[in-house]
Length: 407
Image (tube, rainbow, N blue to C red; front, side, top):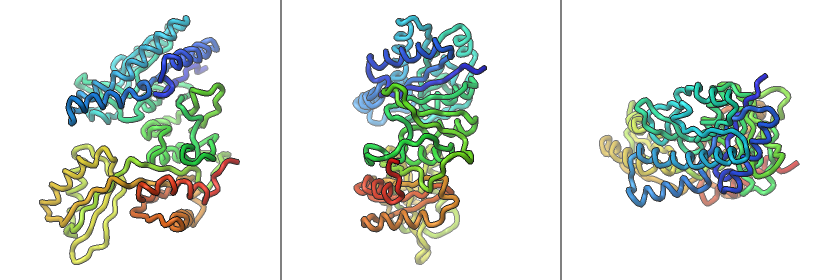
């Protein structure tokens, strides 16, 4: 019988010594119930931002390798403190960094991807009766350099470990009681969902839902790992189960409304409408590991066209610089960067069988005079780029239009 559970605690959950002690008591109770436990922890709330601010004061454009080494210290502090808290109440525990847990990544500093995990050391510690406490968000590359997995990377660390160790389930503890139909801070009557399919959660995570990192959900789907999101601040939290879609699951037309304010739009005007021109821009961005989200190309006008695309806010300066250099080579007329946008999206497995969902979304936004700049769709998602100042209003309007209030 599989008794292993992997748990992950976010920054708010380990934000104070009192909360760390409370988590230790919860883990100790679960150990007495006969469960083996591996715990992955984030840095204490605010610690990563604090470290980044210190780095900026030293060097506004610090090397990514050094940034990784710096940021990895936040999780190590939480990891050591929780291990000490467990030992202090008689629960055997051992802390491990990404290197010690055997988490090997590629060489993309600040946004590394997991290549493999050597689980021998963890399994040995589990077999000897220890709770293994792991510093999330980090690993090492083939050169032995510390790497980090990007914002929310501790979620990915936890699910990857759960899959490697063949755990019974993975539990993500955060400051919210599961996955909601919208951000409760924006929509007070948003409803907690009992279950969400992997595909729906993948879309939500990629569209701005801060509960889970996208790659974390990818791992869950690939290895069919049941994932439960629940609150660490509330006892007996019911949470939300992320699992494989089945016929017994409710399939509302729209399950969730997402907003992503971490978006910026770059427009290249007067681009020669010739084969291979667009490729030059996006190849240049890809070569420096810049991800592009939505892309629109206008209809050609007098052998020229305009291309617009979106990137994250933190990438806008780097992306603009590359595009400007390439724009000069092809004699593009103008290049504009707009950081004052956001992406609002609707997600739902029920869209597959219900026509007119996009039309209803556009109509609801139109009634509030909210202009749509860009649109992208998938089988279970519709996303719109709008002005950032209308973002939260759009979420509330859409939540009401699709009758997603509490039941």
